[in-house]
Length: 209
Ligand code: DLZ
Image: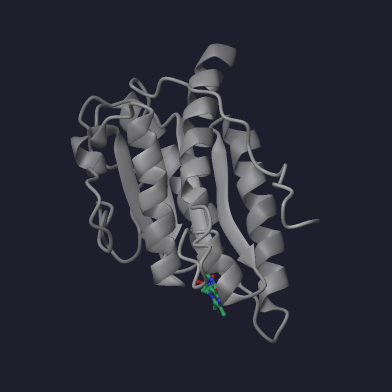
């Protein structure tokens, strides 16, 4: 493509109202710098669409391979919670004997804990991970299994799961897609697109129900 021609690639935006939505962000901790920028971009866009601070929860997991399990638990847990009046975190035990989610451990953006949430299920979940290709087949196996598992969760549960997993061949590719490019072009933060997608799918799936 000539350098004067602009790219036609990318989402076309439609604005949806997120003010009544509850959104969960589940993110891996591998490749932390990129992850932090993507999570911040997602949260900024959710808030720009009207999603309340108190209706955004953030859960971290070790790596991208853990994303499907955590998304599945978060969706199931919020449904159980919605079905009880106590607000107890039934079914949301992550690691060891913990009975509450270790929320917002790494990130500064304001988020709330599940324990403080109104008792309604999540309208959408954003799964965020950054996979960077190494010298073995590890990358291919994780990319493949995680993308299939996340798709299956949203189809099986009826809760939209936004695919916020970067599958980058190089560190530079990952940085550019988080708006952190090392060159003169910083790149676009894809977290913003995932925030928009979460609001659109959350709002639409209420209508399609
Ligand atoms: C082990 C591993 C490697 C090598 N690379 C990445 C990566 O680039 N991005 C990522 O999110 N996670 C990585 N992991 C960790 C796995 O996803 C997973 O956490 C472990 O294999 C434990 O199940």
